[in-house]
Length: 223
Ligand SMILES: *Cc1c(COP(=O)(O)O)cnc(C)c1O
Image 1 (cartoon, rainbow, N blue to C red):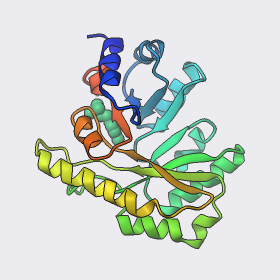
Image 2 (tube, rainbow, N blue to C red):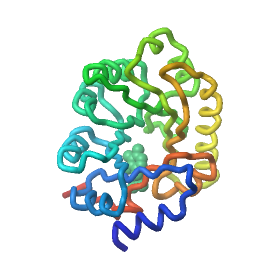
Image 3 (cartoon, protein in one colour):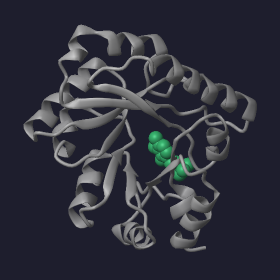
């Protein structure tokens, strides 16, 4: 199956309220162009340098999403163009994003990454830390960021019951936080679901899925 066919198959299965992020990490620009020519405009990358390189080569009407863990010292490289940062997990990081966005006279949309998996390896904040962040005095002054939702990653497992529990936890967290409405906080998006689990994520309330291998094929990290 071609990238175009994969994309079309997935898009046809999605409810209208679900946004598809095509996760193109490790893939060559020629693959991204194929997806672009099939109509895809939202791409997700997990390394800032790789996203910057691709941004420079690709058409400018693409929305670039940073879906990986963000190091504070690298925010400056993407501040000019990034459309949505999924993995915000601390006030310190948000402060840096705000600072860099201001330099470019932009407002950068961000999602708070919530730890929903039992695995220790996954990044993210607890639901209560997220709430404290959104209610903090410091956050009120961040005029160059908007928190537009939450993001989460389920445990890497075949156990559907566990995955469902974790996705439901993110949905509950979203429902709890979305009452906090300020000039820089308006939660609309629940980013959850990847190639292996996006139908389940949608069942559990996802509004944004991040799909890589089901579109572009398996990744090869050795080349
Ligand atoms: C790689 C990645 C994805 C996509 O994974 P697939 O299983 O290839 O669909 C989604 N989200 C994040 C955060 C990723 O790093």
